[in-house]
Length: 210
Image 1 (cartoon, one colour):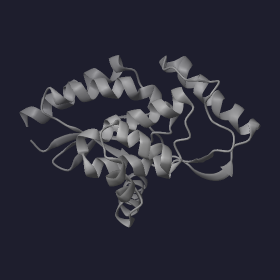
Image 2 (cartoon, rainbow, N blue to C red):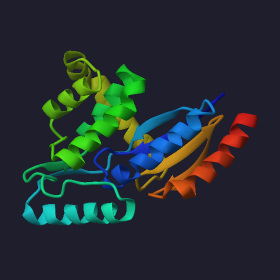
Image 3 (tube, rainbow, N blue to C red):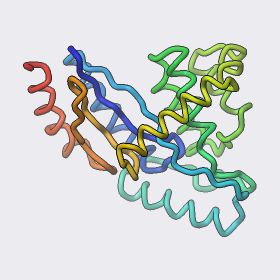
């Protein structure tokens, strides 16, 4: 069956962290019908200015809004370390790299980056941090590090970003359903599971029967 879910996300997007339990449940729902989920990395920010105290307060305000809406837990004390540059390319490239090395580990890698960033206060823009997280999801350090730094993975990450931009997707999380090359939008932005599960069920019914 030529069908799949495409989850367009960025591991350093706080709304994607809020959406994580929802999309995991939706992926399980689709998997019951033999429909896999693939991650597409969006490239949320490329900020090169080091975060100062004022910027940290602003970002933590976004986190508080996500927490209030979704119930996902954040470490407000340790989060957003001062001096970090909010450039999400490296975190996205880490997921793209794992997706290439071991597709089944791509979602666990995205989840592990989210947990490290939002709950443990880790600077997930740093290669050393990402190498450690990749090892924690089962990717050998040397294998990951060599691939992560390669021109192949830089280009693959840029290709994801371009695909997202060409579709006109301006916000994350976005969940698409694809059958035979045709895309259906399930959501652009956070929605709770009880709103999205029936939509997915109707699409699955047509996709599986078709």
